[in-house]
Image (cartoon, rainbow, N blue to C red):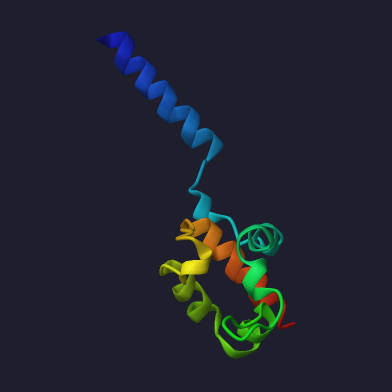
Length: 101
C-alpha cells in the first residue's frame, strides 16, 4: 500500500514539474487548420460554389466566434458527418480568419 501511495505521489510530482497543461492552453494553429481544411473541407469551400461559400467569403463575413460555432454543428451531407474536436475547430477557425488579413 505504501508503494502505491509513493508511486502516485511521484507521478503527481513529475506532472507538476513538467507543468503539462491541457492542449487547449496552446494557441490555435492556422497552419494545422490549413492542413485539416485541405483534407476535409477544400472540395466545397476552396472555390466559390453555388452551394457552399468559399473560405475567403466566410473569413470576410463571419466573426471568429461565428466560424467556431458553425464548426461545432454537424455540416451538410456532402461532408459525410465529419466531426471536429475542440482543438481542430480552433485551428480551422484560425486558418479561415487568417485569410482575411
